[in-house]
Image 1 (cartoon, rainbow, N blue to C red):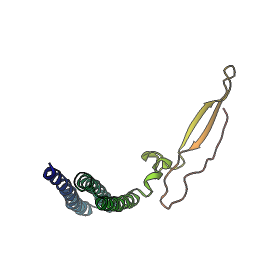
Image 2: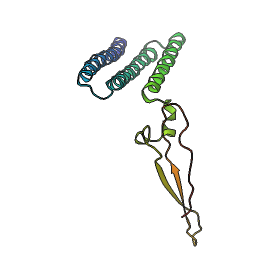
Image 3: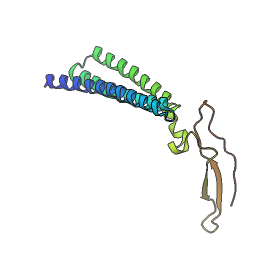
Image 4: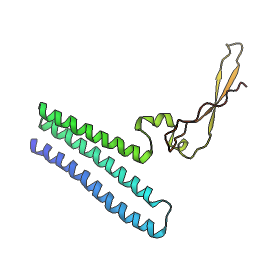
Length: 165
């Protein structure tokens, strides 16, 4: 059983390496092809492909380390090493996400859905609420700008209009 777990851990690590190497080869060939056809922004597509491959490879490597440590080397020293590896790989993942998406992973909810992010100018949503009692149903409408991502780190749009209808 122990030997099978060791093999599975090594297999997962090998899969991570294969994913990264295959993505580098495929991405490089695609990048060269896009350069020769003068496609729009081939470097950005190349960077995104490599970044996503690295993120996936890091996830597989963390999984392999967890399997190896928890199932095969459950000692205080093994757990310390696992903790350090997870912290380092998590930091690397976060920096890759920042590089690819332009914001911290936890800022995604504040930025809106992907279709509402970079490139959307002054998009607004109409929010309506009933503020009257059961015998006086009054409606209030608010025009609220949809938050958008910015490229230079500035805050999302401020609230501009409040209206009553």
